Amino acid sequence: MNTRWMTSALAAAALALLAACGGGGGSGNGSSSPTSSGEGGASSPGGASAPSGASTPSTTTGTPTLAAATAVVDGTTIGASQWSDGSTSTGGTGQAVANLNCTVAGNKYSYSHLSIYQNGKQLSLPANVGYVKPTMAKQTGCVYPVHTVDASGKIRMDVTSNASYTLGQFFSVWGQPLSTTNVAGLTGNVTAWVNTGGTLTKYTGDLSSLVLPDKGEVTLVIGATPTQIATYTWTDPPPFTSTVTTLSYGGLVGNLYFTDGNTATGGTGAPVDGLICAAGMAETFHVHSHVAIFKDGQWLAFPKNVGILSSCNYETHTHDNTGIIHIETPNFKDFTLGQVFDVWGMPLSSTNVAGITGDIVVYINDNGDVRRYTGDPRNIPLTSLRDITFQIGKPLTTLPTYSWYEPQ
Image (cartoon, rainbow, N blue to C red):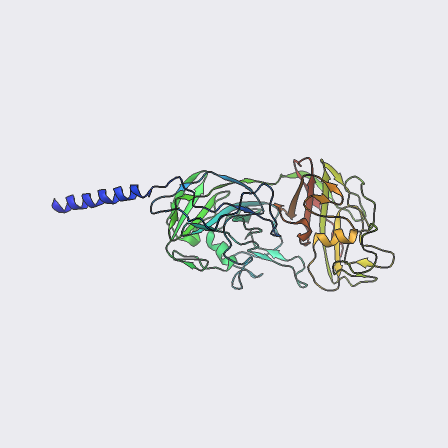
């Protein structure tokens, strides 16, 4: 009887102490505020302010609560930088990893979100985990079915075949350890929380077996637990239209608006941004990207013969008014959209697309893996089957669906 009395007294004292410390969660938000950046690292319109490094995170020894949802768009950076972008050398570099193959992107995607906290401080998940850059040998590059494209914490999942994926598979693609004592090289006691539909649940199973919840959120906590765990609502891109736009060689897509060929300030035969103009250039590396420009809902046809002169062709050029950008060069190198516009002789920025100004939104679509781009559009890499859509003024209700031509 005396032992039971002492145990009860100690438990009551512990509960009183916990309540005094705010152990059941409090009003303080221990998560980092999202900062806004795109693939190029530029600031994002509509994003939240950057986290202050001077603040001390609020932590709890009890169960955290969910913070009020923060609205974000793709391209937003959430948390403080901790890891380098991309997979590590022990992760996915093109080989099969954790029963996942690196291939051309699928045509149907969903997502799950991952937050990582260390002693109450939120850390950003790196961009381009699971993305393998093109090479001369594999000119399309490849992407794993679970990957990231920005530092928002969103894990993009290829659900073309209705597959599901685990947290362990993502960490294997990333090439980082995952256990109850180690998350991507950060050691300490690890707890996991899953938010589905606004319900926060502690996960007590094998972390590698945790199924990434479709449009849900996983939070890994190393060390002290924040009093509140951040949650997000996403401003998703418009859906794809069911009407297929066929890109036929020599064809026209959209309404004629621009004069064909380079402008007076464009390429005249001399190198432009490192791009050479030559006659009979070998096309050992040959891929295609696409650009679509919409002004107040009207599709403006991209001009033909940009980068094509009577004496030579630039390494990036157009043959028709379909918007397809041909990349033809004897040696592999990286190309950006800014180079195309410089060869054309037209301005390109977040406020000006070929002389058209206004409220500009950019979407990138890699064969169905679509997201908003919030960086400098000049820095957008040109890769195989990548479509870049500019929305100027009136918002688009749908994004185009394409049937590509692929002459080699």
